[in-house]
Each structure stands twice: as C-alpha cells, then as structure tokens.
Image (cartoon, rainbow, N blue to C red):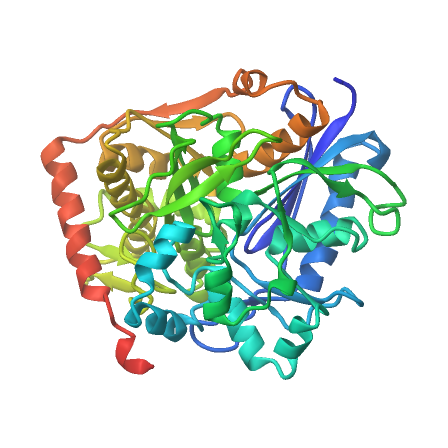
Length: 503
C-alpha cells in the first residue's frame, strides 16, 4: 500500500501540530497553532481540553489544505501527545468536568510528599518504574476527585472517564466510541504496572481512584478505532492506528529501535530516552523506567528516561515574561553577541527540577550577574542550561545501564539552533546528530500508525528512511568542559528547596 498519506497529530504542551506524510516519510503538509495556558496559582498549570480539540480540528483542516490532500486520501491517523496531562470528562456528554491539569503542575506535591514519608517510594518504583512525583497523572486524578464536588461518587458510578491527551483525542475522533490509551502513555500515569501490564489494584486503592475511570490499554501500533464522520470532516472509517507519548514516539521516529540507542527531544521540556529493548532496567539514579512501545502482538519494549521539565519553556519565558526577545529565532544571534557565558548561569527550575534531582521545591536561578551582564549573557545562559541538564541525565543513564553513549540523536525545536547543538556536543564530549526531519515525535506516531495498517511493511523499512542533516563534534578542551560543568552544579545546589518554606 503506497498510495495515500498518513496524518499525524502532535499535541504538545503549548500548541497542536499536524503533519501529513507520504510513503517516503516526507512532509507533504504542515500546520500549527498555539492554545491558551492557564496559571491560576503559583505552580499550577491548566489547559482547556475542549479548546485543545477545537484547535486540533482547525489545524488538521489547515494541514490538509497545505498538502492539497482530501481527508479520504488518508490511510491512517497517528497521535502523539504531551504525556501526564490529566483530563476527566463526562461519558454521556463528552464534556470535561474541570480544566485539564498539565504535567508541569505542582499542586499535588504535598500528596506525593505524604506517600514518600509513608514509605511507598520503593513499591511505586517496582510496579510503575517511576518516582512518586506530582509530574505524573495519578496524584492529579486524586486531586480532582478530592476537590471537585461530587466527582468521586460519579466516578465510582462509571459516569466519568479519565484520560491523558491521546485518550481524549481518540475519544473525540471516534465520536466517543473508544476509551483507550496505549502502553507508553499508561506507563506514565503512576497507576500502571509495567511488568504485569495492567492497572495496579494496590495503587488504585492507595490513591482512592475508582477502576471505572480508567481507559483500556492497547499496543502503540494497532487499530484503536475509526473516525466518526461528524467529528472528522464527514469522512468515515479512517483508522486511528498509532498512539504514543511524545517522547516514545520521538525515540521511534529517530529509528532508535535497538538497545543502547538514545535521543534527546528539545521541546517545552527536554527528554532523553535510551532504548533498553525487552529488558526492564530499574534506575538507581532517579531516572524513569518506562514502556517505549508495544507493536501489535509483539512483547513490549522498555526505555530509560530522564525528564527535564524546562528547556524551550524558558525561551518562552524570555519572550512572554521578561519580553527581552520577540521570537525564539532571535536567541542564537543574541547568544553569539557575547564571547562566552562570562560566569552567568541560569537554572530553569521554574516548576521545580526533574531528573536526576526531582526537587519540586527548587526554583529558577540566574547567578553570576555583574554590571557588564547584557541581554546576550542572559539568553546564552538560558540556551546553555538545556545542554547542562542533558549531560546531567546522560551521565546518570550511563551509570544505570553500563552503556557509554557514542553519540546522541537530537530533535525538536532547539535542534535547529546550531549554537545550542554545538554547545551540547562540547559539554557532552560526544558527537550530536540532527536528522533532516526534526519533528520526529509526529514522524514516530505516523510510523506507528502506518505499520499497523500496512502502509509501511517493517521497522527495517522505516530505519532506512532516517537521514542525517547535521553532525556536531566537540570543539572544546576537556579541562574547559569540566570547569563549565562544575560551575553549573554550584548553581544547581543554590536553587534546591527554595520554595519549601512557602507551603
């Protein structure tokens, strides 16, 4: 089956992207639109799930127009999504019962502290592969059930559905006929047993979450259902056939199909994943063990992950908060306006620190400022923080796995910034490779959907489509590399626990 196209919905934290791919894996059409972010209290981040759906429909229409493709020409639809964001909706009306709580939201940090203090950390790690942190969906669900009047009783009666954003989109595309997620997204909820591949009864009991809320869990590459004509441009029967969390989708799109291969995606946050194959590697370094994907009836495959909460979001903060840039494109030129960081460091703990620190009370820090500090130094410090955080995670990953990385494949927004990629290679001391198509999250979801429908025949065929665009090799001396990294750690130490006394 070589005729037709695959449509991929990449539903990110700040906007929706839709790409249409042909059989060669080339982009035929693309569209993007941001949607509103809500910050009702410090540390709270919310989305309106209905707005997300409306923006997604608009962007699908724009992408079809840009590609000059009819909806009926589509052979499959893939979905990749911001993971951990939590939506609860009424099964009868399909309307959300509250705003979605975004993965960045910290409101359930105290609940997580309580679980850790009661000694449940090891149980959760063994069952879910995760640390107990408000980043994940489980304690967000509990918070909504505890704080929205009458919601727990309605959930127990089976009237309410829970889903991450992929699940919400599958529900919408199929006209409410399918309530399902995939292995990769389920493994990020803090509720799913990644060894036994089932929702965990003990954890649901501990968090007082009714089983009736939860979706069915299916392979990442497999047919979930078909489009409903009322929801999808009057077109019936297009298979929704690929679903994966954004970082697992990027790992697949980067053709990191075998154990030991790793990628980093620079988006709102950054996420380093290393494929460990069918071997489940538990981390001693506070990294996450996660399901990479399930392909049809094959056994699931696993990955180690380091989740960095804030990278691209710090550039947005420069634009929208400090207003010192008008667009992300300006950052490279501003950073190049200074010879080096001149001792200025930025720790982007705007919503706490993720891997390998896991400190929800850390807060952002800009340090090393002198009378000579300029806009360029601040922007450079923000960009360099992406690379420092990545090295933190990769060093932890190497200690866990015993595998020394020979190269890192990079994608996402910042991968088109040559200054950032060169500094990433410099601070890691290994080459950084950027593929021709950097939107690998959408590509991975398309590949998963196309595999399920026979549009593509095998993983080997997909791996052959990976094409190198730029390769960055380290340019600085080892002594300078270590000096820069040592000072980064001094800055990180100073921001830890800052907000602990505020709550």
